[in-house]
Image 1 (tube, rainbow, N blue to C red):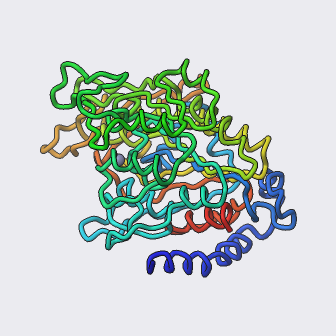
Image 2: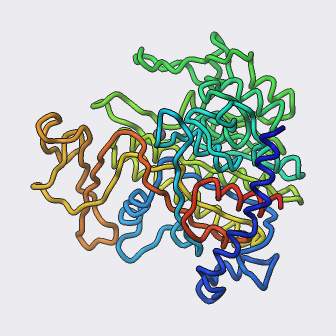
Length: 446
Ligand SMILES: [Zn+2]
């Protein structure tokens, strides 16, 4: 219980600080933030402050400033803005974990910081550095009477959604995380990949093992029995394809659309694929349809995992595809917020991935092999990672850009936070990722 006390006191102590900070930085000038003014229905004197009936939290996994700018150049060009960049409030967050072996975070520690307000070690799912479980936003929202849901192109039990709806000392225990969804946190909407963790070996479900890839056969592996059957007994509508998702009309929905991620990572040279059978935007729209029936409001987590995974592979083409899918989902969320201004929308990334930057195309400045622009071989002055491009700048002006990667891992570069709606003004500034938790908790539960 000591951990609960710590979390509560931290929230209480910090609730007023960001409000003062935001007011000082923005100067109370509502003219600077007209969309917030329109959205801040609960506190007209301080638009962007106040309580939110609902929260939509969007994670572009692995997405930092360069990913967003690359997406902007690719999708809308020099004079355009992505949906995620049109949100009126902007901040920056640092993402470091509390890990004796790492200064750079993984998705588990980062999402745990968002969900609980407590820094922890890489691999931890909403437990502290001693392994003690912490209250999660997902569970707290449900206790407050709100509907909850998660949508992701990763496994539905992958680190980010897991940290919002479960507690475990090891992110790899995905079948135990699935069981916690059913027995404890009970999100009403669960949509994404990861069927393998819901079906025991020998019961391959809808998606059979992948043939011809012994290194990554994607076989069912639940040690918790047939969790799909248990979900159905608990009242979940279970669907596995786009038509089933469209037809589902229950108030509890489990959709598993792939064995693992909803896209395919392949060994180098064999080509990654990004073609989810249900687009993230469609999953988001369906989740909002279901959750908005709750008069008490809801908490919805939306995640695009492809930004991170394609950055691990230094695959700029596929990363840009994932950014398009993500921004389409953000537009769905923005449309919902426009009609429901008592909703807080936050769009951010849990950490940077790839050490990505954007460059002009310059054959004399290629940093290494691996990308489509080639360059010096590794070990001969080149880096392990490479350079991708050229990519066309949208808008038909003939401009191009290159994507240069410096690592196939995560980095400690801060990530951008954009937001609108009640509570969003408290996200102005430069802060640790635990501050995002304070804002979410104050807006949704305070
Ligand atoms: Zn990653």
